[in-house]
Image (cartoon, rainbow, N blue to C red; front, side, top):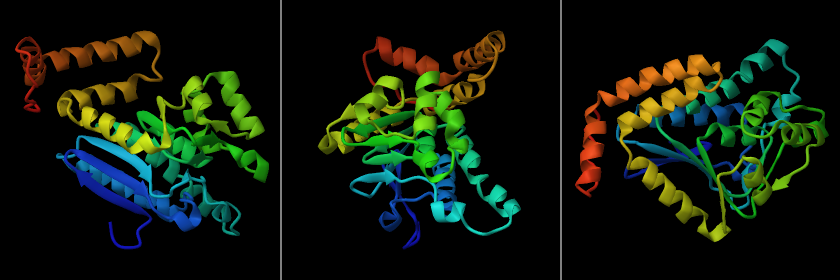
Length: 261
């Protein structure tokens, strides 16, 4: 990314790391920040060498403070505000349909719209000092854009508590209710994220894409429609060379060599 960009984009091996990098705004999700995130995820999606994506922050204590409040209160025509907030669903869909696994490194506070960005990722590892919350109600706003993601990850009554009271929860409570997969000591976060990212990147990229696409498409289907979709995906997976290679490698007690076919 160019100097001064709101995000950093780095690739190490088969892992791309997208880091929010506007500490002066506590990584507020301005239009500029959201556009940069969309561009970075599109770059990772289109790079065949990238097999897993990490979303992180360069700020020591804050992942992101959430939406840009100044932008919310700006005196501009409503049609412009409606167009601006379209960036949120675009980003959420992009992450969901990335075809590659995404892992959020939640180091520090993950608040308001940033909670939706974290939940859009497949996996979340948090440092134990991280906090999570939807404080929008306290400033006369409501977390409309991230509500759908919260209700798809958090039990209904707990989700309602978060949305209506606007209180923060700590990392261990976030793990208990399903926001976070794993909590580690703050000084172990980078190592834990790196370990999972490398493990994700080691899987068959073809089967990962098939699986990820199926995860996205089946999530809101009625049961029988979901099963029919998944049956078709399984039949397709069974026709690939990678599944044959994976089985051979298992029996031969070696690492598989994925062909991507």
